[in-house]
Amino acid sequence: MQLDELLQQHQARLNRTKWEGTFRDYLGHVKENPHVAMLSHARMFHMIESAGFEQTDDGRKYVFFKDNLFGIDKHVGKFVDVIAAAARGLDSRKRIVLLVGPVGSGKSTLAILLKRGLEKFSLTDGGAVYAIRGCPMNEEPLHLVPRSLRPQAEAELGVRIEGDLCPQCQWRLENEFAGDIFAVPVHRIIFSEQERTGIGTYVPSDPKSMDISDLVGGLDLAAVGRYGNEGDPRAWNFNGALEAANRGMFEGVEVLKMPIEFIYTFITLTQEQNIKAGRFALLYADEVIIAHTNETEFNNFVAQKRNEALHDRMIVVKIPYNLIVDEETRIYEAMIRSASLDCHIAPHALEVAAQFAVLSRLKESKKGNVPLVTKMKLYNSQHVQGFTPEDTKELQREFPDEGMTGLSPRHIIDTVSNVIVKRGARCISPIQVLIEEKDVVEKGRHIDIEQNAEKLLANIADVRNIYDDVVKKELQKAFVHSFEDTAQQLFDTYLDHIQASVERTKIKDPITGEHIDPDEKIMKGIEAHLGISDSAARGFREEILRKIGIASRHGETFRWDTHPALKEAIEKKLFEDNKAVIRTTVSVINPDREQGKRIDMVVEALKKEGYCDICARELLRYGAQLLMR
View 1 (cartoon, rainbow, N blue to C red):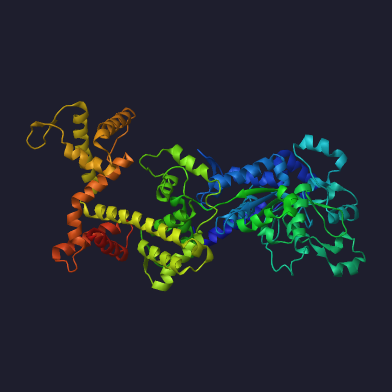
View 2 (view 1 turned 90 degrees about the vertical axis):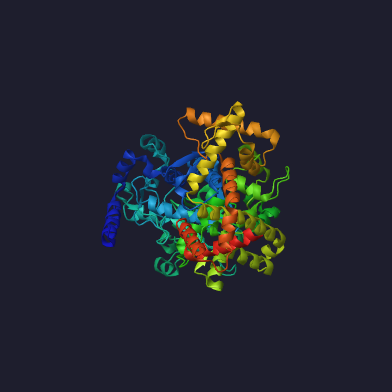
């Protein structure tokens, strides 16, 4: 579709949202659809829930956040639980939702998603919002209903009516409309942070220059001169960030760096839904207050006894770093897409960066001997011999604050950028990433890195060992002709022999046709890569046959790669069988014609797996070093 068509469609959508009428007309809207009079928390929860969710073992995974926040679904779910409770009118509605986490963990991203989401949601029929036209706070028209009639109005309309008219609307009702509430104009509004409608944001600046009027508005001195009274509602600018956020959401960035009187203003708003402005009575405001801060600021705040009352009026939702390698890789992919890097990213380059980052965030378990690498694999839902899903959950329960320290995604992307800028790389390889990370750690460019240098260097060594295994597998797949067929043939042969061994029968030799005993050498050649002892061999073989039988009963095919441990063993066996050929080919400095042809074939095979010519040949060179050790 052409750009002009898309722009026309967008304009048509905007035109459909335009509506103007009177308060009498608005009452008809509310009778037809009470959702239009939702309070702010209910609107936010409705927006999130309407996008859908997936049910997982850890709870709901909300689609609304799916492509922007990775690996922290459980913590995002806790946030949504708070909003859901507030949407039902529970006491969490009277609290500041404080997001606490390390830098780069996703706190700001969560807030931005909610703001952009509310903007889009207000364009839909399900998220339509109406306000008194001309009201500086875009307030709910139902505030026009006298308090004495509200019980009857709520019962008839099926809504909850809170709050009173702002001073300006009260003045207009009495002076412009002679008290006739049905004549008051109403229009549909669209939330917009840029236009300060339904969304407000405050970022603290220099403490000496911060002014409470940025939050609650201030006197218009020219209007005071015109109307002759500071108490005249027309003499007040209702343009503070909290007033702009009415009906929607307010975001407080690094809120604990603000003066204490600022925070008390938030507390009053959340606890009583009121803003104190100038010489007026309290202004009613309905908005979700979301603030965020880093853990250091939060710990300092909690440590001060004078802040106990404030802390009691906050709901803290911790947003730690992600601890799942695959999800961390997705974070980097998203960041790189937005940066539009003009170089190739080799396969596994972002994966090794993710492994390094996750290892830096994990804590050593005190329950048995569980290396960090094993823990990392378990968290990434990888099969590790001797561990069950329950073991993983137990490890996750051991440190509730795991992920609140370590390297941030921003640090990793800075490292990737350094590879491009410093080394002029046209292709970023895993080894280049690890070399750059090691250089950063050894030079101790940041205080956190300097304090944890020993652990970080050990993490790099662990990731390097993992990558070495990956290189061997990549070379193996590229060199072994028809790898899938070869692996399946090896599995079928293994299966024939273990079946005969368990059933104590003979097998037919495919060449001679004679019946022979099952070959222990063939079976142990694979089982040795699993660390299976002679005494445990029969049990393992029976397990494989049992699983094949179960798969068959369910109409499923049990292939060579169905069983994770067996798949890994077959890959290792194939590599061992072909190591001599691979070593000879990749280690030759001046290959002959035949060897050069084989190398070119391997490079082409690697290109089909996402490598470019540069990183494919680098993989071969690095693989040669590994195989010569």
